[in-house]
Length: 87
Image 1: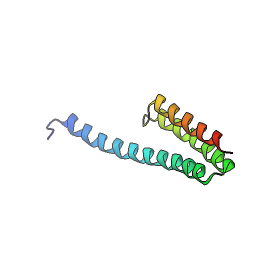
Image 2: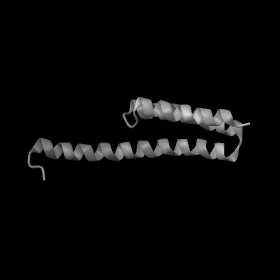
Image 3: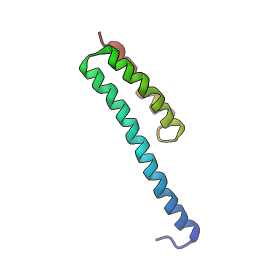
Image 4: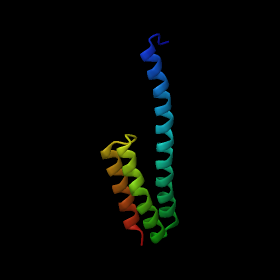
């Protein structure tokens, strides 16, 4: 267990950050899941609308430090490709 005041403060601060990052990541996953559900339903217009909502959220995850830039780009690219494939 930490003894120094600064180490104890760091532990408290990390706990808050971890909680915040967890909620941000959960929100991100929800938006991605909405796109995947729309793709599974086969409705292209719904999938495009869901993707349009998800893209800014994914990029927000990058700016907040929850996702790496390349990971976000890969996710958006793959979702976009799947939506484009729909008839």
